[in-house]
Length: 319
Ligand SMILES: Cc1cc2nc3c(=O)[nH]c(=O)nc-3n(C[C@H](O)[C@H](O)[C@H](O)COP(=O)(O)OP(=O)(O)OC[C@H]3O[C@@H](n4cnc5c(N)ncnc54)[C@H](O)[C@@H]3O)c2cc1C
Image 1 (cartoon, rainbow, N blue to C red):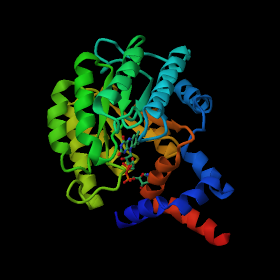
Image 2: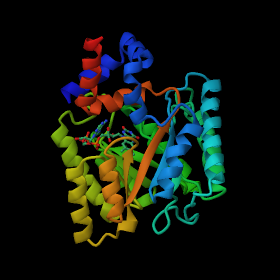
Image 3: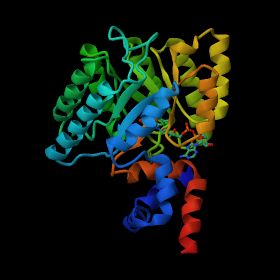
Image 4: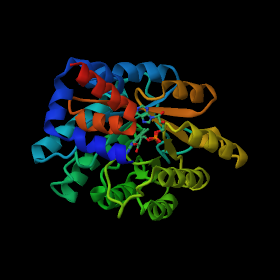
C-alpha cells in the first residue's frame, strides 16, 4: 500500500507526467493497457473479443469535466459509443425486462459521473447521464457508472439509485477498500441494481479506506461471496487468481450457476486468466479503455503493480 501511494503521488508530478506522455519508451506499456486514442481503434479488440465469446465494457477515458462544454463533449462521446454499439452485428442486447440474469448484454459502456459534469452540479451530471441511459435503453443497452474517489461515492450511489428507479439498464461499482461498502452493499443489493465489486484504485486516507492490502482482500472475498448469493447478476472485477479460485469453489458449493454472475478484468491484464476462465464456461467481461486522456488511468495501473513502474524507472536510468 505504501509503494502504491508513493507511485500515485510521484506519477501526479507534472514533469513525470510529461516524460511518460512524450517518451517513446513507454509507448508499448501504454499500448498494453489502452486500446487506442479513438473509438474506432477501441472497436478492433472489442469485435475480436466478442467474436471469441467474451463480453466487453467500453470506457472513454477522462475524468472531472471542469466546464459544461467539456461535460457535454464527453456525454456526446458516450452517445456515439452507444450508437456504434447498436450498429455492431456482434452486439447482443440484454433482456430489457430486468437487465440481469439469463441474458446479460455482451457489450455495454462504462461512464464516469465527473465526466458528465458532477463538479458542476448533481442535476447537471444527472441530465447528461439520463440522456445516455435513455438512448441505451432503446435497444437493450446497459450503462455502468464507474466509482471514482471517495469524495464522489455518496453522490454517485444516490444518483445511480435515482436513475435505476426508472431505468433498470444502469448499475454501478462498489470498492471493497472503503469502510462504508458493507453498508452500501446491504442498501443496494435489495434494489436489484447490478453491482461491480472492485478492490478500489484511488489514494484514500485511513479514515475512509482500509490501509492494509490484506484487510482489503479479506473484505473483497467476504463481499463477493455475499454478492454471489444475494446480488443481481454481480460483476466480480479482479485479477486476483487466489480470490477467483476461492469464489469458483464457493459458487459451486452454493450451487450458484455460472450464468448468474460475471468476472471482469482490464484490457491487457492477465489475458491468460481471462482465457482460462472463459474456457471453463465463466462469463468474462473485458473492460476496454480508449481516448487521449489516458494518463490518470495509466498511473493507477502502474501503482497496482510495482513491476510496471520498475520498467519505467529502468528505462529512465538507461536514458
Ligand atoms: C473491470 C474493472 C473495472 C474497474 N473499475 C473500477 C472502478 O470503477 N473504480 C475503482 O476504484 N477501481 C476500479 N477497478 C480497479 C480496481 O479497483 C483495482 O485497482 C484493480 O482491479 C487491481 O486490483 P485486483 O483486484 O486485480 O487485485 P490486486 O491484488 O491489485 O492484483 C492481483 C493480481 O492481479 C495482477 N494485476 C493487478 N493489477 C495489475 C496491473 N496493473 N498490471 C499487471 N498486473 C496486475 C497481478 O498479477 C496481481 O498480483 C476496476 C477493475 C476492473 C478489473
